[in-house]
Image (cartoon, rainbow, N blue to C red; front, side, top):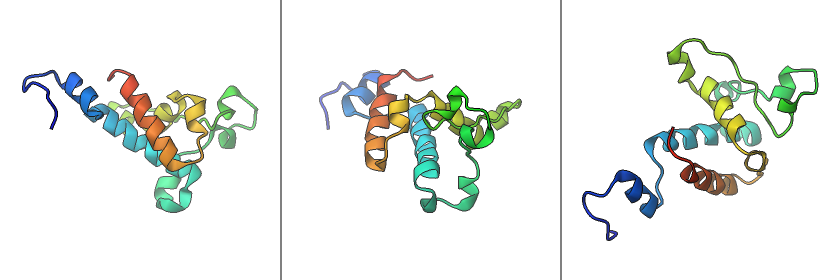
Length: 123
């Protein structure tokens, strides 16, 4: 174990132990699923693979969203729908830096994603 006081704030404890918050664990898992859907579709069920589409597959016009593997974002009006992976996935994915979205190795992606999530505060 570490030499952290029993009543330390959870943020301090998480940081020192190199762990993600629950919010960031959720983001981490959603983004891993999106990555697999784009780069490793054979590792997922077909029903999961159909949740995400690249923006370049939807729009025939060459837009900025077509660069860097941006995903088409479906609009959701209801709060319950906004929490679904179909809505959250593209939002989170498109919010990643392009350098992270174009990594070809899954293990490298996970390492870089975790460090990226640790560097930003919970939202």
